[in-house]
Length: 77
Image (cartoon, rainbow, N blue to C red):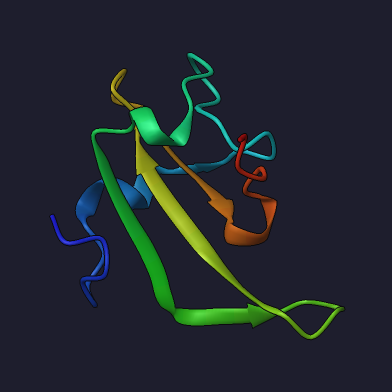
């Protein structure tokens, strides 16, 4: 699956919002997902005038979830 495909995959229809930016079921990180789709067609502008979009993940435990790109944790160095 192409993460930037214009048409969302079927599994995104059942996705739940995860505020913690991890799988709401097993707590796996986004980088452990077996599939990803970014909803770049409908960006939202936040209060700080920055764009954000929905990032959809299909976890290795088969739980679909999504979070805002602005909620992504900073990279650990």
